[in-house]
Every structure is written in structure tokens, then in C-alpha cells.
Image 1 (cartoon, rainbow, N blue to C red):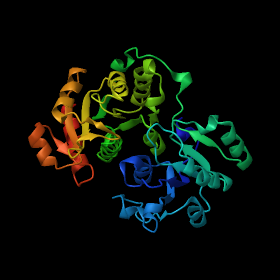
Image 2: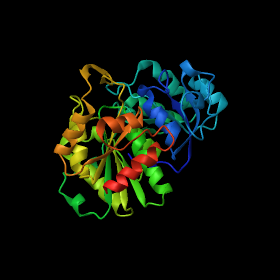
Image 3: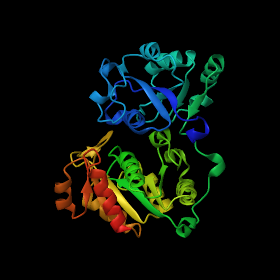
Image 4: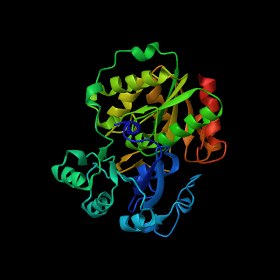
Length: 346
């Protein structure tokens, strides 16, 4: 679901991030707080950080004083005007933890819609439907696939005039969405006519030009749905940034990464990497593929070259090791270095 069709910006929101704010498990909460143009976050629920403000945990411009509280009840006491509660943690498997339920129901009873990125669709559960009807609120499942727009890729992306930049990675949760958004913002600030496509639940909650939670799209249609989104944004923009997912070498999720690569047919690629990670996020038995090997794999499957590395580490070290321009989007000048490399590649 494209949330801009559901809400007018900005929407006053409580973000639920119990035990995970600032961690990779809370990347949805982190992203919504840091970047969302759709939600105006007024409180973050995380008992492990209660009493702090988000600026103590995230290096987030514009949200430094947003309070972190221990419960939904406390959030509602401080911010009774909240319109939605955003579930900012996506557990492995996407199910709804039982200990979240009381807090979510409290928010609903207070008049908050529930915006969820879980694989379990609350809006299709009779008990949740009944509760929402009684409270007069909506259950919004952003992961619901666009059944009416499913199509296979037919190559129409080859005919667009815009340049397409795809962000790929060496693993899940290595900054692909953050890199995509930061590049988009930097391009706009540089006077470029840019748009961006989200492919995950966090991206959709931020407010892209177009998007879908791609991991809920049936396999045959992944490339076609992405192709359609890219083409739609290319109508109004000269440059389209696309958020990637997972990694081509990831045994669990490579199918989605490959579908995105085929659907976008990018003109340039930025790869995101955490050089300090040795095993895959949530999959300790899987070792991370070497960065150079991942780059070779990407370039063997498309006509584009990897233009730059978005690293969580030291940019100079990464440039020396790979021979590619590098930048850390969390450091001054990092995003601009990546954008310069992308423009040179294009």
C-alpha cells in the first residue's frame, strides 16, 4: 500500500520500537524517525531507552528532542494528539509478538490507526477487524502486495529517458535504504531532477515517489512490478534512485535482489557494505561474501558497473581495498562523494 493514498502529510505518530531502537532489528523505527516526510513522530516506545531522547541514540537531524518512553500508555499521556502507531520492529518471519498486543490495543482504543510492516496482516484477522471497528480506527498493512498491478517484466524500462541508480548490498540491514534516501536528498539539493522508489516497509513509511514491499510480491512478478514503478517515476524525473534489498549472494533472500536487478536495469549501482560484519544479519551460520566477490557477481548479471561503495567503515580504507570511490553517509561529505561517483559513472 502506498501510504500517501491513505494519509495527508504530516501524520502525528507514535513509533513502537520496544527493545530495538537504534539497533538493526529496529531499522524501521530508525528510518521513520530519521527520514519520514509522512509521519511526524512525537514519541518512541522503547523501555530500554526510556527517559532519553532520540538524539541520544541516533544522529538524527530535526528529531533530537523526540522523547523515548517506556510504554504506549506513557506515550499517549505525553502526546494525546497521536493519530497512528507505527510498528517499527520487524521480527524474523514477520509475525506479531504476543507481548506487543496490549500496547497496540491501547493505542487503538485511544483513536490511533495501526501502521504495520509485519507479514501477518492485521487487517485480515477477524478479531483485529472487530477491535478496529469498535475503536473507529484503521489497520494499515503496508506489506500487502499490489494484486491489481502484478505483471511480468517486458523490457519497457529500456525505453525510459531517465537514468536509474540501484542500491545493492552485501547483506540485509547494511544501509541500502538509508543510502538511497540520502543520495536522493543530496541530488535534489544539488539541483538535479530526482525521484526515488522504495521496495521495503520502512521506505514506504518514509514517503517515496512510488513503492511496494517487494518481498510480498509473487516471484514471477517481482521484476515486472519494479519495472513498472521505475517507469512511473521516470515520467516526471531525470534521475531515479531505487532501494535494493538483501544481497545476490544471500541464500535466504537472493531471489528478491535478483528480481530488483532485472526489473530496474540500472545505469549505475551503489553497493552498501558493513566491513565489520562477518556473518549475515539474523543468520549466524552464513558467512558474509567478500565485497569484491559481491561486486563481481553483480556486474556479471547486468550491464551496469558498481560506481561506488557506501560503507559503514572508513572511506579511504574502502577505496584502497576496492579501487572504487567510497563514502560513509553518516559522516560529513560521505553522501556527496557517492553522488559525485554516480554522476561520473552516468
